[in-house]
Picture (cartoon, rainbow, N blue to C red):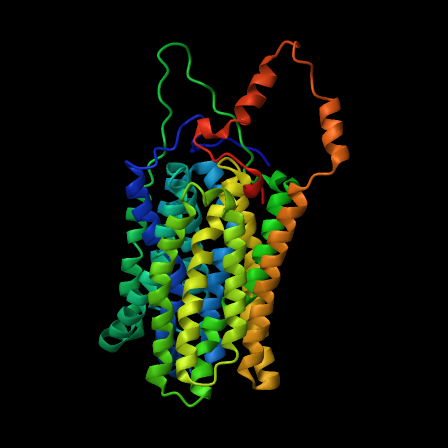
Length: 459
């Protein structure tokens, strides 16, 4: 697949690490907040939808599932659109689609129409905003990128804490139809954020023609030849199987222990409040000079921490134990959220990031659809919440081991391969041609505003 690229990104352009980048960061914060919090926030309307359409909870829950599936599963489509048309036009289109879906949903007469409008159309619109916003953020920030990713990721818990109460207020005053209509208007703010995504411009040379931009594939599947990317994709897919399970079941777990409904619902507030501070803190720590080269190991540790928290949380026998679990889960969950795209960027670099993130999100979409339902089936079969938390913890722990062991395997190259490379190395007095110069420039990514890949960030 080939084609011209409109917004080619920072080829030969040093990331400003500030300036207009702060406006881009704000836009990414808002987009991330809408993208991750919206599928959870619409759940406040489920009871009224059940009453009006005479359906069960599982039927309404498919709305959030379809939203998440569209957010993750359309990753390759977003990559193709970004590489063909650029980030800003794609995001403007996505903002209009997200708003149109919710406005149309307010006129729906059955649950199937809601699946199509709220689930498919709004979900596609949010997907067309989320991925390009991350791409633009990583183009504007290099040295400060871990901090920027952490601050942008904090949009998810902040918007969740805001949208859920807002949705309840809207439902109480205007019903679910009026609430959906107003939320559709709020989603038009995605278009405002899209307008902030100004493409980076190359400095004009003093003399001579402007450098020609290289062509790029609409969907660069060559990332699968990068063993580091393959290992990351495997680890991320396994992680997502169990990552979202505890927040889905923790409230029901508390109710099963005899905790009142209000106190049980407060557990998610505790988790979200801790998450707000955990994400930017993890970003700041990862951005430190001595820590950043080891970001892969920090990400693996955050996954291990999250899985271990799930296992210990399964032993909680009262409300206090679940509160402690939510605090530590919020910390580890925030670390994972702040580091996942920073590590992916360190693995594949700037130029392949748009394709890599789309492919990773597609793989994670499959896991998202499998994870929570599998936990629900286990709960139906055993009626023991502890088993659900143990399963989730085991899956996340396995993903951390895949990532860290895979990194060790890649770093330890066989001696025969090293000797073969030395044998084919050209002599020092050989004249260097233009292709070798180009190869040298590609091997110096820091001068082009990219991250230098150390052995520690090779996976």
